[in-house]
Length: 197
Image 1 (cartoon, helix red, strand yellow):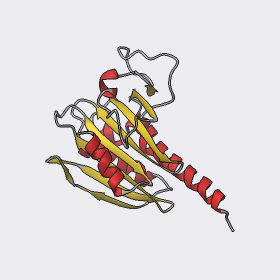
Image 2 (cartoon, helix red, strand yellow):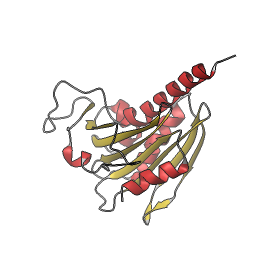
Image 3 (cartoon, one colour):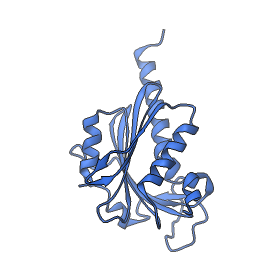
Image 4 (cartoon, helix red, strand yellow):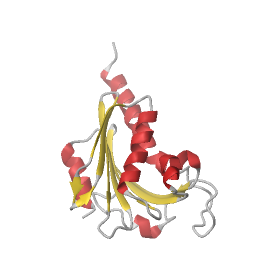
């Protein structure tokens, strides 16, 4: 019989892995030694300060605290672009802040930018990634409205742990805003949405 500590470690690994594919799959590789935003994109990259204008769009506070981690970057490989490439997207820029709620739960607030990028396409990308993972089940896509704008929401389970992704356009239409949640209450998800204003 598994001990509570063992179950806790398993849950931590599950949440970490799900957050990893929800965020890292569209947030590039590990931090490069150098990053030149003006240079042509030849590899997926992520580093703090890569795109300050996008990082500035990430709320400074959630749950009364700043993010555990904040960085930005770009993706241009077919592996990470996935279904976005099918819509003619050749490069996407992003920024994200992560708030850990516990060792087994957390919320990430992110923004994505590319010419013609839509919330529907980002939602489609997340859904395709989730369906390709053997660790996910019970996928429930929906189309709520946030601030009068059409959003895309995906709820799923990973080893019975709830996960959610919500994508919707910013008020100025320049970026797609995303809330990624793992193992948190609906009120925490709503707080993440509200943090974008």
